[in-house]
Image (cartoon, rainbow, N blue to C red; front, side, top):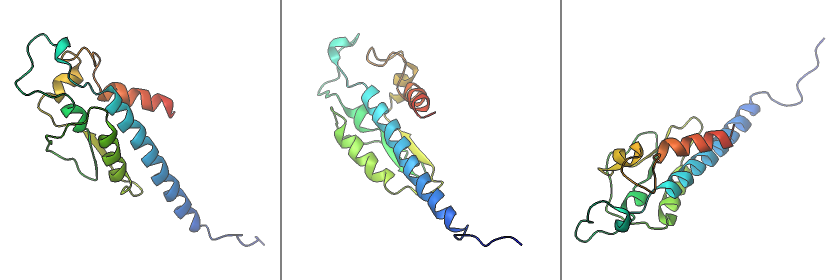
Length: 141
């Protein structure tokens, strides 16, 4: 006759879900940090043309937005040259992740696709998001 269980097998589900949330947040933060670091902060000295009147760099970096469950389709006028504010906001969003959450990290600035294609910035000649995903996925294999 079989022996009884030392613990309730259903309690294992809770442990798995805790680990899932933990690793989801770790990977989300790794992706966000990589994206923010790779996000160019406009330097008009490197541009082919002139900067628009009143131009201040850091708008693209500030618009790397994190959302849980559904994408965000807006962008802000915020500026973040060093990326710290963007990372802090992303971390706050990731704190709301649950097991099996879908996490979106996106940038909706009008020129985001041109930057991602790599032909719009000398600071990001291979893009931002795809390169970041590749690096993080290789680091966490």
